[in-house]
Length: 426
Ligand code: EPZ
Image 1: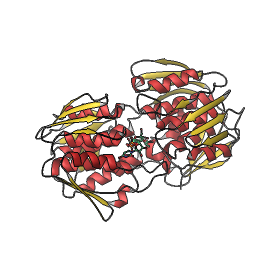
Image 2: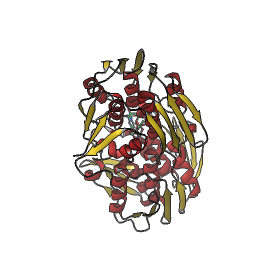
Image 3: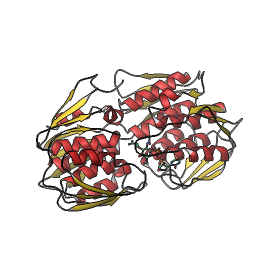
Image 4: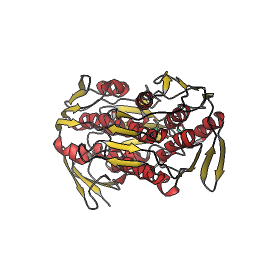
């Protein structure tokens, strides 16, 4: 099993390329199921979750090939889908497999998707996905651990989800594009990744408006055609690097970034004392001396992203002052706290709130990654901790960060991967 070894204390200097967004690429890959034509996706990061999604699509009968050059291009063709079942073995490793549910029902009238099991950061049920499909006329049953959905043809409906759900909005959006009539998604998620998916669907012939607001209107069409779509840059990877330079000091430039989707993160990091400049597709950020503590609440977009919570907590661990953090999206997204404490952080948890008292320095230790963003938090802490930090179970990190250690090495960090396979699936 791979580990990362980091010797802390070096500032970060230089430039890195931001990869394509995992959480945009996943729904866009699943959208290929909505047409028999070829679909080409560009800027698809080489990550384990992407590899899992490609395996799932191939298992359904989709031709899915990652080009060798450039390595970020994937060509898919769902002209001969033979299976409508997403098996437990794949779904249990990646909850986002649920994103095949909407497209399969919309185009083939049936889907059997294994119920995703539990998850480290929270229960994460899919009741809203099911509620929306039922509202569109699908017959839904739970059979032997599978969600089974059937519909001769989905009918447009007005659907108000009980809470804002990102993949719920994405599933229902993909179901609605081929439904008969008009669908209105009230209380829709506004994340940029949803806008990216909608833009791709529109290029495939879908009729969508309001994406990026909490009310998305879709007029169903009878079929969609192929397209080429470039996946948006990963705003969470970019934010992670900014937290890293905020904690470790130095000055970096992020290329192929999308600062327009990073408002809440950029605001908080400026508040922490980073000097930040942005262009349309780049962000320059520098930090001299110790950051200031910044409190925050995680919220749905355009609020501060829950996927950035662990990373900004790591910066707060060594900041000047005390930060009060409230996690409002998931019920158990503080698994990184006990590991940060092993490095010397002073953090108290009270329900959904964490109080982080900045300490002058952290000291290296062996710690264990528990989930994707917790792993990133430990990498950031390791970059500033005195001595060596070893991070175990970094398969969590490989799910969502493309060659993190190569990029950090490029920025001057003292980091290396030891043991095991050496990185991402292709
Ligand atoms: C997406 O997960 C992201 N994953 C997550 O990123 C991200 O943390 C999350 O949105 C919130 O921004 C992908 O896009 C692949 P939700 P998702 O449905 O869609 C509850 C990462 O690190 N809920 O918006 O699963 C749910 O339990 C990952 O890249 C229901 O109760 O999140 C949660 O408390 C982690 N019933 C809240 O809503 C439902 O049917 C928001 O969840 C759906 C959701």
